[in-house]
Length: 142
Image 1 (cartoon, rainbow, N blue to C red):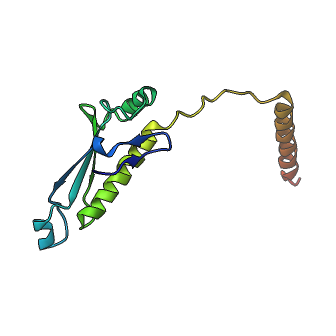
Image 2 (tube, rainbow, N blue to C red; image 1 turned 135 degrees about the horizontal axis):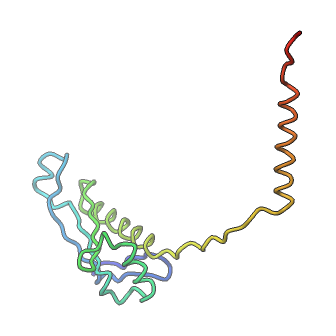
């Protein structure tokens, strides 16, 4: 039985809910690539999962909308030559993807205005700078 995927402290995906598919990988590796199924596709049914709380699921579906196919999110790993390493890479990518999708939205920014004192300091600094520049001007010789 595959081990569970820890996304966050509060969100753990059961290993039974993850599906792995193996296929031949493309790229360098010589004859090794032609004989081993080292490419890994890790799939997770986000919409039908009992592990994901309902409130978090809505946020995740919204954020992963373009990555979902019939409610299933899939991650592929084929960089390593060994299937075991590609499985570990795929699991880490899936965890990172789900972690980012489940993150709470940032707090809403409240607009503020500069205080009267800040406005006055800015204007007086501009006036001082203008006086300095005016004093630097050369006067034409008569």
